[in-house]
Amino acid sequence: MKQQHLQQGFVLVTSLIFLIVLSLLGVMALRGTLFGERMTANSQDLFSAREFAELALRDAERDILGLRFDGTTYCRTTSTTVCATARPENTRPKEGANDEAPFWLASSPEIDDVALENGGLNADVSVQGVYTAGSAAACGMPVWSGADWQDNANPARSCAGTIGAAVPTIAYGTFTDAPFNGPNGTVRPRYIIEMFKADELNISPSSNKIFFRITAVGFGRTQGVAGRTSVTLQSVFSPN
Image (cartoon, rainbow, N blue to C red; front, side, top):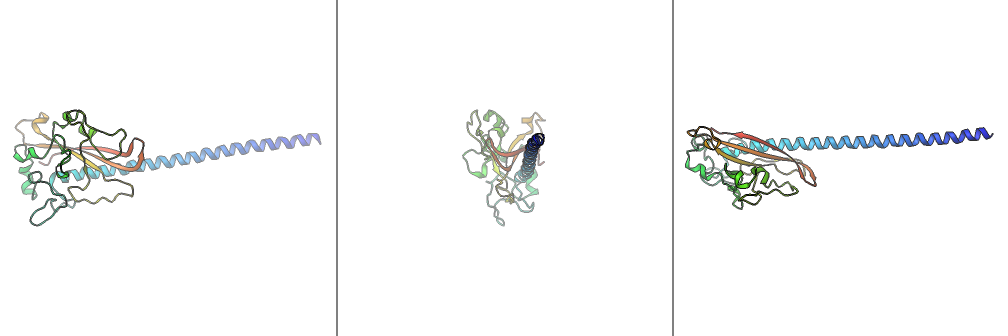
């Protein structure tokens, strides 16, 4: 009888050990599942942010050309069309193909009115977001590093140098009337444009070509301590 009693106690202890092991395995499996779901969610968030950054790049190209998002109507107020946010005179092509070629030449007198060293800081939105070749020096860093992307970055970005403030960026659709149909909680992507004449890039001084470096940032829905999830893309664009 004494031997049987001891054997029953051993079974109880063994059962408890098995239960503890099974519980630990269950907790580890649950944690692994949650970790996998977080990784998937982060990947989807980054993928969405990259897609939105791509949209902003294309929107910036249309902005440079003065095109609406549908490619058929120019986004500026004329005798026949009305644009919600019109560019000032001589800062964008007015009527399309006939104006684009002569407009985007380094020798065109209107070109010097398009880009501003501080990107239109504290100016009307209609002249914001387009920078000169000297903007980086005035900012004391690459312009995009001192720009206000409105992503709640911590610490907040700001130019040093002679500008000494966060310079403006352009929200997707501002000058093209392009709609943005992102998921709830997603903010519009933004971009800046830097304009370079050929001689400023040490290309043939006789060239009239103009180049634009576009920096676009797309955002996800996740907001962390350092700011909102974002993806930054750059491209170089020349309309002629």
